[in-house]
Length: 381
Image (cartoon, rainbow, N blue to C red; front, top):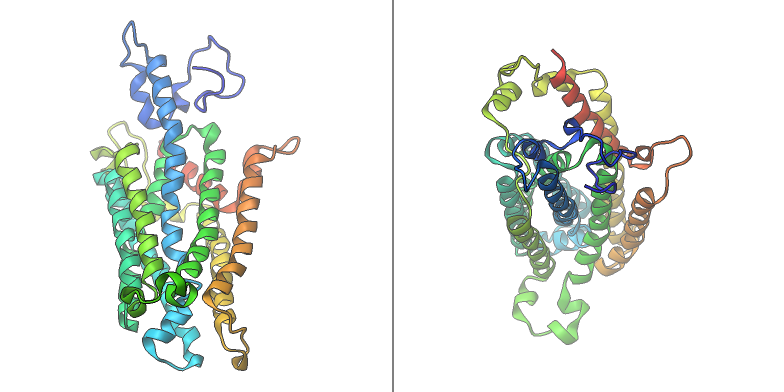
């Protein structure tokens, strides 16, 4: 294993003994399973190379959930007006309801997705989540009434469990020395989706009006003017599901002892304390970290929702009367700035005396703190 491997801490000598305590859980099995011709270090190096490929693939799959969330923002007000035939003064309210239903349902189901991933396996539940998110936007695009829009938005939110599964998989794929940088790439992928989602939705909404030379006379898009962005979003999410099926390994499946410890018993067979979810939340600093994370995530989402509604609202009601394509163009600038800042955090060297993790966005440091807190609680007698 060369010195550039993410599993070897900086400064490790060529002939020093590997510290398998710093190796991800799913790689430790190779410590003792080698033979004379294929020793543990060679097997571990092979798995390390495969693990390196897993991280960019998981970052690509990570983009599916924010794409499904943000694609509708540029045209949701127009679609609400078209399907509901409601007054202009009520469009903002209904648009906000449809935008928030995804996240509201997601809050309810995330714990379920996490616990099922522990029991069944991360890869299986990840594929299920991605397949559901591939179908949700398509159904939403073919909605013809307000209740259908609400229903299919909730369906998409129900299958949005990939966000927590991918975070857990990344924690098992990277060593402690590379966690901050790995989650930096995770946030970079999220920023790319934040930029691409509204751009995709605004560019493809109502194609008959935007591109009459290509789509005029196509009855499908004349009857369902917002089906095209839903179909494209569904196709992209389906590609993420295909990547998960073909190339992503199931990094970990919890043992029965760990499941009993996490969701029932307090100690495993070795006497190690394993806290329940309730005790973890009550641990010192966790509530503050969760509030900080919620605040950080609330700001960009609320800004995007308010701005798109204000831009669509007619001038006589205090808005700008922009089209969905113009709204997407303005959102593209904000998304591009966010993506560039995320890339700068990853590429810029840390200041003297500072660790690279101090350049990682707040949300990543919160995730790392929570994972490490859970690990330290497990190790305590």
